[in-house]
Length: 575
Image (cartoon, rainbow, N blue to C red; front, side, top):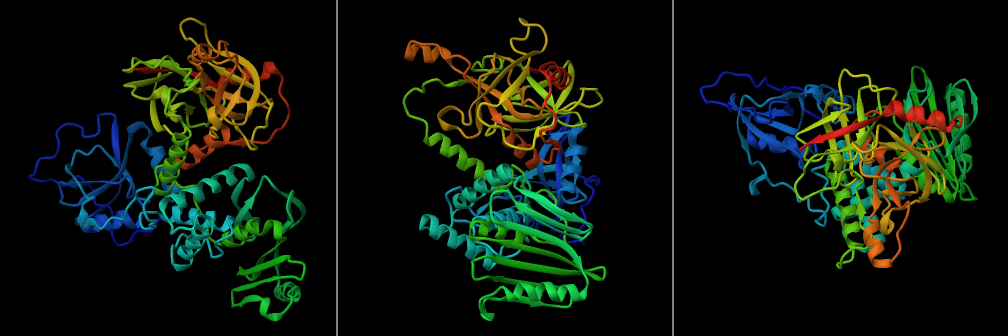
C-alpha cells in the first residue's frame, strides 16, 4: 500500500496571499495537474518523492500558502476523476490525491539539485532502489524469485536479502555488480512470463489468503468445498488449498516433515497463528506447507514441485499473503518500467545498421510530413468507460482529437509501444472488444478493421488475413507480422482472432517502394500489429480497465464484421 505519514494531510491550495499567483492557466484551460502530496519545506518534499518512488516524474511548485506541492503529471480535466480513482484503487496514488488548475501556484521549484542527494537514475548507472515505489520493489522481488534468486516475501521492502539476491543474479549472469540495466532486464523477462504464462495474484476461495499462480498453465483438477487442487499442464508442480482444524494441521505438517531425508533438511516455523514446513524428499521433490490461523481455523496451502519447476514454486511460495494488493505491474512511467523501456529501445537501436535502412516500416496513418498537418486513424472501444485504444503516432501533436466527430481526451501515450488511450464521455460507442486471454499462434486467422484512406474509401473497411510471423521487422518482438491488407488510416485498428478477441493493434506496413527499388520486386501483404499481450501490459501499467475472454465459440465472418463495426471508430487529429 501507499506509505505516507497519516498525520500530514494535503493542505488546500486556495489560501489568500499577497503574492500574486499565475493569472493565466498554468497547464492550459482544459488540463489540470495531479497533486499527490504537499510538504512545508523543500527537503521534506524531496524526501517524500524519494520514499514513494516519484523521482522520475515529480514536479514541485511553491504555493501561495508557502507549502511545496508535489505533482506527478498533467491530465485532461474531463479524464482526471477516472485516472485518480484508478490510481487510488491500485495504491499508486494517495487517497487524497486531487487535480488542480495551478491557480495558486507561485513558481516551479527545481528540486533536483546537487544538494538533494538524489540517486542516479541513469540506465547504466549503479542500481539504487531508493527512487522506486513499494509496487516497483515488489515487482522486482517477483522477477528475482522467478529467476531463482529470491526466496523472501514479496513485500516491497528492499533490504539486505533483496539486495543480496540481485547481486547474486548479476554476478552469475554478467559477472558484474548490479546496475539499473540489470534490474530492467529482469523486469522484461518477468513481463514476458506474465504474458505467456498468465501470472496473477489469485485469492484462495474462502481462505483469506492469496498467491501468484500461472493461470494459463495451472488447471483446477479437484474441487470439493474449500478444498482445491491445481496441477501444472507442463511441469511437475501442484498446489492444494484447504481449511484445516487443529488435528488436521498437525497431521499435514507432520506428513511434510516425514518427506525429508534428514531432520537438518527441514525448515519449520511453529507460531501461535502461523505454521510453516519446508523440505525436500529423496527424489528431489520440494515440499512447502504454510498455515495461517484465520477465524478459528487454519487456512493452508500445500505446494510440491520437481526440479523442473523450482523457480515457479519459488515465486508461488514468496507471494503467499493474507494482504490484498493493487496492480501487479508498476505504472509505465515508474522508474523501473522507464528503465525497462529504455533498455528495449537501446536494444532495438543496436540492431539498426548505420547505412540507410531497407524496408523501413511506414505507419498506415496519413503520411507524416516534417510538420504535423493532421490526419486520421482508427481506434477501438476497450471498456464501458468510453476508452479507446489506438496508436501513439495517430494522436501525437494534435491540438484536438475527435472520435466520430465527438471531442476526445488523450489519457496516456507511449512511443515505445506506439500505443495511446483516448476517452470520449457521454457518447454510445457500442460494445467494447475483449482481449484474448492466450497468445496468438503462427498462421492463426485474423480479421482487422479500420478507416483506410478516409475521404477516398467510404466508411469502415474490414479485411481478413493471418499471422505470418510472430516477430516484426528485424526480429522486433513487440510486433506481429500480418497478411491482412493495411492502408493509410488503418493505424490503431483492432486485429481479432476467429473468436472475436483482440490479439493485436494494427500499426504499420512495409515500405514497398524501397523494397522494389532495392530488390526489383514488390513485397505484398507484409504488415504489422502491436502484440495484444503488450497492449494489455500498456493498459494494465496505466490503470486502464479491460476485459479478457477465453476462446469460446468460433464466430462467422459476418458476426466478426458486425462486432468490429460496433466497436471500431474513426479518429481525427487536428494540427
